[in-house]
Image (cartoon, rainbow, N blue to C red):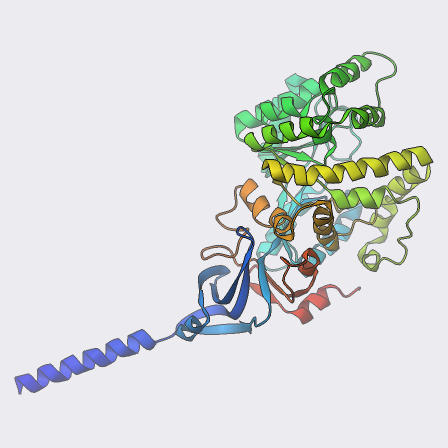
Length: 475
């Protein structure tokens, strides 16, 4: 009897153990037959299953692993390519209270274009942005994750509304105190009226406080000085271009001296001097210095092409113009009127300059500089549309000389790494947040394939192709 009882218990234990090993684990989403684009290596991993729960990638394995899970939802990604959610590393949410609702209405365009994170490079809508971030996190508003600088720092009587005026070095601590109280993600410095000594003082004080700095730079300062002081990100290519001139120091000295006269040297006059003296070897040496200092750049090639051709291009039939509110569209007049006043000589110079700017991008890439893709979409930036303009920026980067894989990194892993968020975002890996975009075509073959969006996964939600088309419906 005792032997029979022991055998019964033993057999029951084996049966229970067998049931335990075959019991399926509940998960929110399973994606099978996936082609994962490894943006770091620049290759495609085929036949993979992604297991996602609570918005996080729990496992990546061979497709048969899906049998171990009971999924609330499944996606067969056969023939699809999965990339990380895209980052637009330079946008603007601005225009004041009058344009607050119009800015908010544009946020779904980022998700519709596979952009799950944006970096707001300063504006006058910070209280609203904080509210939008909370609503997006709570699933009450469709829009991307927003990293923001809040108000810009500039000199007296700044050109952009909502900027914090910093007239003297003594005012720098108070200005940074205000940004820290607001809880901004980084410091954006603008150069409309700021002096060189105040600019460098902001960078140094922010560095001492552990605050990231980014921005435009007055031509009374060299980018080398700014980087040595701790500047993290330079927006646009003007300032890196200036450092490519062997005559930068002497030109800077002339500009500085002119500010003591009634006729200070203008921005475009200085650019003309720099264009004539630019030297690729000097530039390459400086780019290596940038890389060693871990200084990043946001080239914004697409907006330059758009703005420099406003005098001749007809945008009245642009598909995305239908999404732009009347108030934001009215802000375009500032740029358009300026373009109409430009001389033929000025137009030709800017076209030549932009061609030169294109050569900087592959040179920076070769030197190891971190390149961040940014569109500069926002009010006042005429016909540079939220969402789609990032894809156009990526195309410009490839046209400039980057490979599709290199360009894709500028809009995925590069931003996440530079903003200190690579543990969560930027690649498709176990343990990362499931910000994912399913594409119909391989972007490593053609960067324009980032526009062939089938599905977007963000914030624990799956936006099917039908849902994405719904976001693009004009109200």
